[in-house]
Image 1: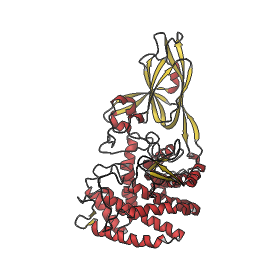
Image 2: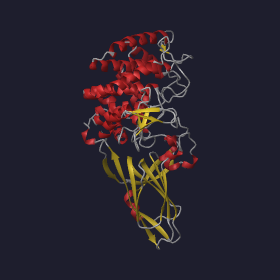
Image 3: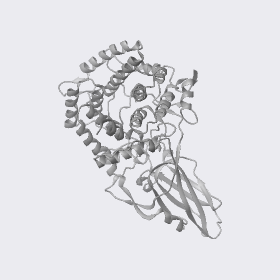
Length: 522
């Protein structure tokens, strides 16, 4: 153990766990991918964000074209890529008497090729917007960009050459990387073509987020978040079976708890392991859930024994937030995630997450036959009883949250998943939810996953499929080749960050249709 004091936190580093994680670092598989076409980006008010791509020439024609000052073109790689760009350039005409000034704009969606990044006014750093300005002093040249990008489209703007020469782009390619191996996935042939396509895009989404760790998104953040990890791991068990990567991620979190034993919501892994100073109630508890799911998938008792103290500590810390009535104390700070939905009160859905993960902790305690089992069972009974007493509104037939007794989708969904009611009562609650449609709705694929799973466990499989087709099917209709971080069918420009330009269009928590389809036989 070593103590690391940072500005706002004290980290107790478990070097043994960190070394275990390092030994589990995966091999990355490299594929050379070339662009498929040259496209034009056209305004179209009928498509998402108001821009679409139209093929104007095959990419192979690029080497036959010369470009000078103020010329531009856009390459389409045909599918989403995560990797490193290489560009081979030569001059045409007189010998180059001035450097080439070249700007590259790199993006996952057509809108990123069309709307100037200079106009971005969101609250996340604009440095996440993918662009490069390059000066080439000597031609011919092969330019290999050092940064890794997440993209489908690349726009080339020739800012300047000189009046005496032009440039030819002889070759553009991407060295794409993932730690996933598509050859290990059992292919399915679904009778429903829409679900088949959903499964394929889910696999691509998950694969592009599988790097040294399960990244939340390869375009932005590019780090390991516990909430994303839990869902990625579930999808992984049904597909790639890269279980050592899940194990690695668990040990990374367990390697850097704070001085109270709480695991962070996310960690950075480069240049070395660093815990972020963000701590979220539900994400810390999902260390329990992720360990539980990992053990069920692998029967890895050694890992369970090593990581059980870390998992149990998350429950202990969570229980400290309960008031005298065994209800979580609410607050106005960002204490729990649940969803990006504006105005969502987190108290009741977080109470349900506590119940959900306590049940998982009890199952793990039974496997280990540890004394904590009995106290967990006793406390769970008290908390479930309190939940029914104080958070259920018999008149509205909904669970309510916070001092304003808010009725939200998230509260009902998580209470169903937590199993506070019986299956028939869950079914009635979910049908009531879909009929009444409370105003405080769902903002992310992360929460939509839990909606679909809640419908499945309530016995409403057909309604679950219908919701998947509306939501993930809607993304496909709007051009998704990987599933997105955010999607609101009623407000397609939605972003919690102030601009859809900064949204991630390949995001881990959106990859779960493959899990739902394969696990539950949809």
